[in-house]
Amino acid sequence: MPEVVNLPAIKRIEGHGRIALHLDEAGRVADAHFDVIEFRGFERMLEGRMVWEMPLITSRICGVCPVSHHLAAVKAVDALYGVQIPRTAALLRELLHLGGFVQDHALHFFFLAGPDFLTGEGASRDLLGVIEARPDLARAAIGLRKAGQRVVEAVGGRTSHPVAAIPGGMSKALDAEVRDELLTLARSVLPDALQAAELAAETTARLLAEHPNYAENPAYNMAQMRDGAFAIYDGTIRVNAPDGSPFAAFDASEYESHISERVLDGSYANSPYLSALGAQAGGYRVGPLARVNMAESMGTPHADELLAGFRERHGRPVHAVLAFHHARMIELVAAVERMIDVLEDDEIGSDQVRVRVDRGVAGRGIAAVEAPRGTLIHHYEADMMGKVTKANLIVATTHNVGSLDSAVLEAVRGLAKDEALTEGSVRHMELGIRAHDPCLSCATHEIGRMPLVVTVHAADGTLVAEKGVA
Image (cartoon, rainbow, N blue to C red):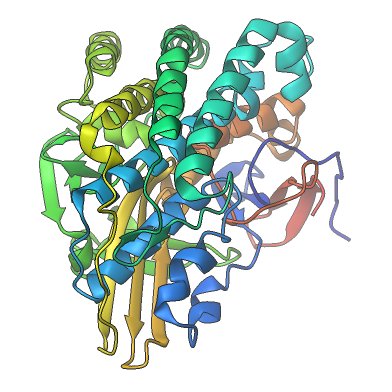
């Protein structure tokens, strides 16, 4: 009988995941994989539905970043019907997306990853630990989250799973009084965002010192950029080589010529790779670290200063996954500053928020946005009636599958089974996982029911140990 070790579930990840450790003939860890063990069947579920329903249906994929799915879907439908939306609609959609970024980044840094490095030894490693150990940070985090949620509610129509972005633009204009309220709110939380970025710089430096050479494998970086600058709503998808040099640039509609996907054993997540490099060498990284590595500018004054400081401290490009935390808070500042810029633009108050969409044509629509966790691609094909005949979604976490595997392996490579299953080793693996902020299933889950399972396999593939709750 295989030996099984069952310990309490590991929390603070979004979804259900399992670490599989593979041992060599000597009984030491030779390989590791971070597997997604929840079924994602959304692409097949979407087939047969009407394509203009996609922005509403796909926002339900994820309870963490529904805004990103809502916007990627509506952009893809716009593309399918050849629609050019009014500038005001584009500003409103960007504002909605910025609100989603602010609430998401604040949640992850302070409450999901934060207990790993903000509370100190002996503190509870959860939300309550942050509140008890650092009430000042908890208040700032809650304020940032509330600000982001209020923007999403005001612009998107709901605090979660927004409904306001429609093919052709937006379903409603922004009321003048609401605009003033949001502008005041965005200005009020900028100091907290700047404080968060300063804290992230300090904690990242400490983490890198405490865990030298941890998960620093050179990687290709991918992000959608607008004229080389940080942009979350539109732009050109770019790929940089591990040394930082440009490797590829393409429109989202051309992604199939540059990105391939392969099915992984033991996981419901596909693993995308750069077609030109092949499945083994073509892995890449997306998300805050990739974007900060690639951006020539964050596009706002404070964030540009923070970007310069990041590069002065860490160089360029940065491959250490623990630097995700610092990069994420630079993006938080950029999102708040850009929110202020958008709200100060007089055109945001225009009532010209949509154009007519003529249906009755078959076609395909592909679009991308930068979700908080990285590049998100939505691809739909529909018949003359508007029924979806094909759907393909590449979510940000699947882009990072190779990077996640690498981080887990680096934490325990060469350790014997018992050493790999110690509390310290598991926490070391978790550190790299949470730095990526994976959203494993792109689905809403009940708090406290988000386990991470570690399995250990002998050289012949036999299961010899399991830690966690499936």
